[in-house]
Image (cartoon, rainbow, N blue to C red):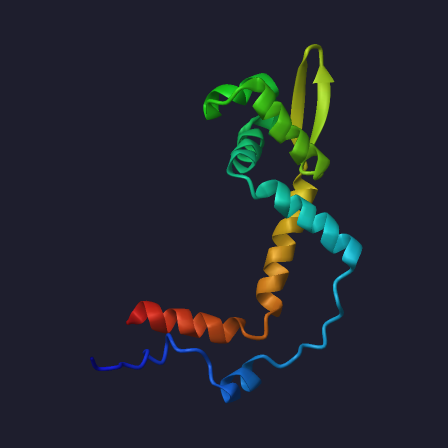
Length: 142
Protein backbone atom coordinates (compact mmCIF):
# COMPACT_ATOMS: atom_id res chain seq x y z
CA UNK A 1 0.00 0.00 0.00
CA UNK A 2 1.36 3.39 -0.98
CA UNK A 3 1.33 6.15 1.66
CA UNK A 4 0.21 9.57 0.50
CA UNK A 5 0.80 12.90 2.14
CA UNK A 6 -2.13 15.22 2.76
CA UNK A 7 -2.51 18.15 0.41
CA UNK A 8 -0.86 21.34 1.71
CA UNK A 9 -4.26 22.93 2.32
CA UNK A 10 -5.32 20.08 4.63
CA UNK A 11 -2.09 19.50 6.54
CA UNK A 12 -1.50 21.06 9.96
CA UNK A 13 0.58 24.25 9.89
CA UNK A 14 4.32 23.92 10.44
CA UNK A 15 5.98 25.50 13.48
CA UNK A 16 7.19 28.42 11.34
CA UNK A 17 3.68 28.99 9.97
CA UNK A 18 2.22 28.96 13.50
CA UNK A 19 4.88 31.38 14.73
CA UNK A 20 4.11 33.77 11.88
CA UNK A 21 0.37 33.47 12.31
CA UNK A 22 -0.43 33.16 15.96
CA UNK A 23 1.53 35.94 17.62
CA UNK A 24 0.00 36.94 21.00
CA UNK A 25 -2.19 40.00 20.46
CA UNK A 26 -1.56 41.76 23.74
CA UNK A 27 -5.32 42.18 24.14
CA UNK A 28 -6.64 42.39 27.70
CA UNK A 29 -8.24 39.29 29.20
CA UNK A 30 -12.05 39.58 28.99
CA UNK A 31 -13.88 40.32 32.24
CA UNK A 32 -14.85 37.01 33.93
CA UNK A 33 -18.25 38.32 35.05
CA UNK A 34 -19.19 39.52 31.59
CA UNK A 35 -17.92 36.26 30.12
CA UNK A 36 -20.13 34.25 32.49
CA UNK A 37 -23.19 36.30 31.53
CA UNK A 38 -22.50 35.89 27.82
CA UNK A 39 -21.84 32.17 28.28
CA UNK A 40 -25.23 31.86 29.99
CA UNK A 41 -26.91 33.50 27.02
CA UNK A 42 -25.09 31.30 24.56
CA UNK A 43 -26.03 28.24 26.62
CA UNK A 44 -29.69 29.28 26.50
CA UNK A 45 -29.44 29.51 22.71
CA UNK A 46 -27.71 26.14 22.39
CA UNK A 47 -31.02 24.25 22.44
CA UNK A 48 -32.74 24.02 19.02
CA UNK A 49 -36.23 24.46 20.52
CA UNK A 50 -35.20 27.61 22.40
CA UNK A 51 -33.53 28.98 19.29
CA UNK A 52 -36.75 28.38 17.32
CA UNK A 53 -38.85 30.00 20.06
CA UNK A 54 -36.63 33.06 20.11
CA UNK A 55 -36.98 33.38 16.34
CA UNK A 56 -40.77 33.04 16.59
CA UNK A 57 -40.98 35.76 19.25
CA UNK A 58 -38.73 38.05 17.21
CA UNK A 59 -40.95 37.54 14.14
CA UNK A 60 -44.12 38.64 15.97
CA UNK A 61 -45.20 42.29 15.66
CA UNK A 62 -43.25 44.38 18.15
CA UNK A 63 -41.11 41.38 19.06
CA UNK A 64 -43.75 40.28 21.59
CA UNK A 65 -45.65 36.99 21.55
CA UNK A 66 -48.17 35.26 23.77
CA UNK A 67 -47.13 31.82 24.93
CA UNK A 68 -50.42 30.58 23.46
CA UNK A 69 -49.06 31.48 20.00
CA UNK A 70 -45.82 29.55 20.43
CA UNK A 71 -47.02 25.99 21.06
CA UNK A 72 -48.64 25.09 17.73
CA UNK A 73 -45.83 26.12 15.34
CA UNK A 74 -43.37 23.82 17.12
CA UNK A 75 -45.82 21.06 17.99
CA UNK A 76 -44.86 21.08 21.66
CA UNK A 77 -46.98 21.39 24.78
CA UNK A 78 -47.56 24.64 26.66
CA UNK A 79 -45.59 23.43 29.74
CA UNK A 80 -42.61 22.63 27.48
CA UNK A 81 -42.77 26.07 25.86
CA UNK A 82 -43.08 27.67 29.31
CA UNK A 83 -39.98 25.84 30.51
CA UNK A 84 -37.91 26.93 27.51
CA UNK A 85 -39.16 30.51 27.67
CA UNK A 86 -38.30 30.66 31.38
CA UNK A 87 -34.70 29.73 30.53
CA UNK A 88 -34.57 32.38 27.80
CA UNK A 89 -35.91 34.95 30.27
CA UNK A 90 -33.36 33.94 32.93
CA UNK A 91 -30.63 34.46 30.32
CA UNK A 92 -31.96 37.96 29.63
CA UNK A 93 -32.88 37.24 26.02
CA UNK A 94 -36.61 37.90 26.57
CA UNK A 95 -38.74 39.54 29.24
CA UNK A 96 -41.97 38.07 30.58
CA UNK A 97 -45.18 39.97 31.27
CA UNK A 98 -48.30 38.35 32.69
CA UNK A 99 -51.49 39.52 30.92
CA UNK A 100 -54.49 37.83 32.46
CA UNK A 101 -53.93 34.10 32.32
CA UNK A 102 -51.30 34.22 29.55
CA UNK A 103 -47.64 35.11 29.67
CA UNK A 104 -46.31 37.36 26.93
CA UNK A 105 -42.63 37.42 26.03
CA UNK A 106 -40.72 40.28 24.45
CA UNK A 107 -37.39 39.98 22.70
CA UNK A 108 -34.47 41.90 24.22
CA UNK A 109 -32.61 43.31 21.21
CA UNK A 110 -29.73 44.70 23.29
CA UNK A 111 -28.92 41.24 24.64
CA UNK A 112 -28.96 39.77 21.13
CA UNK A 113 -26.86 42.65 19.78
CA UNK A 114 -24.32 42.02 22.54
CA UNK A 115 -24.02 38.39 21.46
CA UNK A 116 -23.63 39.41 17.83
CA UNK A 117 -20.92 41.91 18.76
CA UNK A 118 -19.09 39.25 20.77
CA UNK A 119 -19.02 36.83 17.85
CA UNK A 120 -17.91 39.59 15.45
CA UNK A 121 -15.21 40.76 17.88
CA UNK A 122 -13.85 37.23 18.25
CA UNK A 123 -13.78 36.78 14.48
CA UNK A 124 -12.02 40.12 13.93
CA UNK A 125 -9.48 39.75 16.73
CA UNK A 126 -8.24 36.28 15.86
CA UNK A 127 -4.62 36.65 14.70
CA UNK A 128 -5.11 33.58 12.54
CA UNK A 129 -8.41 34.60 10.95
CA UNK A 130 -6.87 35.62 7.60
CA UNK A 131 -4.71 32.51 7.49
CA UNK A 132 -7.68 30.27 8.29
CA UNK A 133 -9.81 32.00 5.65
CA UNK A 134 -7.04 31.44 3.09
CA UNK A 135 -6.91 27.74 4.04
CA UNK A 136 -10.70 27.38 3.68
CA UNK A 137 -10.58 29.03 0.26
CA UNK A 138 -7.76 26.72 -0.83
CA UNK A 139 -9.74 23.66 0.30
CA UNK A 140 -12.93 24.74 -1.47
CA UNK A 141 -11.01 25.61 -4.64
CA UNK A 142 -9.57 22.06 -4.85
